[in-house]
Length: 225
Image (cartoon, rainbow, N blue to C red; front, side, top):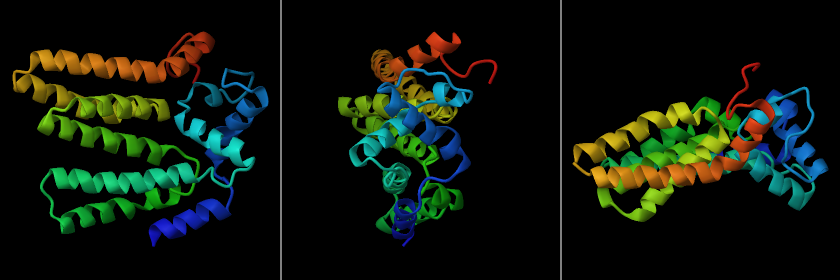
């Protein structure tokens, strides 16, 4: 019910939040006009230095359809992914099917989540990647498969490219991951894992970080902001 109602809301009503108007959709139109995601003159510098992944995805829909009908759907799909991911995390901790359904229900009924799932804001997109990061860490610790290591790097890298708060939210889980590897006397695996993860994260974020440094002489938020 929540998914259907928010989907209809997202498609029928155009992006109309303050953030959408001031920088999410604005910078997408600048990119299209300039045929480039390079920095451009603007009095709203948030359009330049904030992490752009969610807008990159919206940009594809904007170009394919030549309208903003699916601009809100990026957050909506991320909500569905987060609900499913939370259910799988519960399963990793031994929850029954009923427990998984309850975990999914708790996630789906978060009030701010329902509101944002039909907007162009980026909180559910980063939530989806953080949920994926947690699930990948649990899977790697249990099964020790390289594919989960790649998933850790990808989800961490994409969460950082989505919103700067990823540095804060991902930190305790990465610390837990490193602690478990060291506790199990897997020093070589610790070095290998964090080397692979670092390479993936830097590769995903290199373009945006380089553009920030070129304009503001800092990789993250400029001091004036």
